[in-house]
Length: 581
Image (cartoon, rainbow, N blue to C red; front, side, top):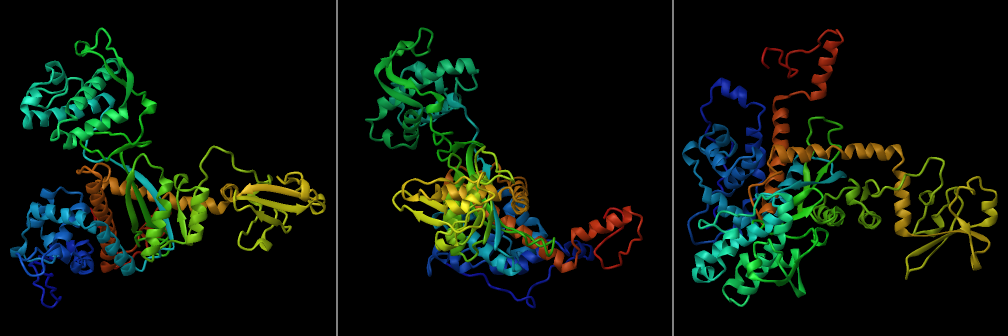
């Protein structure tokens, strides 16, 4: 039964007995800002559909459960470690606004609540709603944002090609032995022992040398075919997840042939005879292929096995106040085998729907293409990033297609590099754009020799013409912009998100997560990103509460001391010169 948390006013709140030392240590920490600012922003009624309106035992306080989950990722703890802090840490009691006699929660409560969050897609909504409220709380500017991706791996061991075959077969044989022992006993003994010990926890071929592994790959491919062929008619076994994994590995890693493939004389399965299956070459195996039977959703990309996490955060809020935080506005889990430019437009549309769409978005080359830049402009965002490819950037004295100003909405505004009006035609069927200037005008132009315009033909005989497409034009203009000082400054701002990626991995455990499967990974990523936002906000509000000065002020004092200038620091500046401060 749904029961909202009883809100206690500050006057009615029971004050915990704290010594003067504890109160000094508490001042400026994350604890009181979490209690006074974060807890009130958690909308418990959004989770009411999880529970029956009238029947059942009252639910545990949702604000408390969400708070425990946030603090768990705030400090990168396991469930058991988080519950230990929840039970005995006085700071957690203060932050969650609990009395000591009401601090009770179990691991099953956390587990069940995370399951409900995944089933109702509430983890994403929790991140977005609470983040939007934090942005409004601090009045952060969202007109400038930056976007990047970082790699993450779920809780599985990296496997090479031979180990993928062996581990997939072992898991299938282990379940077969438990549920259908007679069918298991009917398999050739040498096939069973190649992958499965009596305890079911060993793989004989695992960890072999490269040279031996190449020879044995053909053996395990034929064994996989034997298992699939033998149990495909079995109605019960054919519905198992382990059997579906067998079939997937066979389809991705092997090719069924017309002629049976004869084992070599020293192959371990030579007594079992030939089979019509051969191993694919490594280049023929798709990057979306199975990387581990323990996590079928993980794929392979240029950064390795696992998932790509797309991270977008605000930019430029530290210009006025160096202590003011930047917040993550969007996180998303995508397959490692996908290109990053697939996500740029969906992210912008998500931010647009939440009312925090940026005017400028700083990215790297993986997120940009001419088509993406064009569509983003139509949405109202200037996507800025280097052009992908090894083509040299234009020189300052070089005239390129990027120097043409073309207005597709109002053709009369189009100009050539010399500022002369252009006649502009677009073929809708092919997308080709024709830009023309009178040859008599070009004859007296100082840029005529370097200009890419060519003499026209037919009806355009008296003109000099450039034929291109809108995508080529956008690409050329971006290459020209890439040579400007403004572009360099904007890209310098983009580099700051690398520190955010590092923070998420090292402080919040995003690099190697303790879950498997895409849905669980998504839930964990949203909670970790939200915990990062909460940490930044509470640290900032803690500094404001005690009137601490920003780091540049401290650095300025240190520089003055190094230069031999008198220290002008007065009491109340927030600087403590005592030993051990």
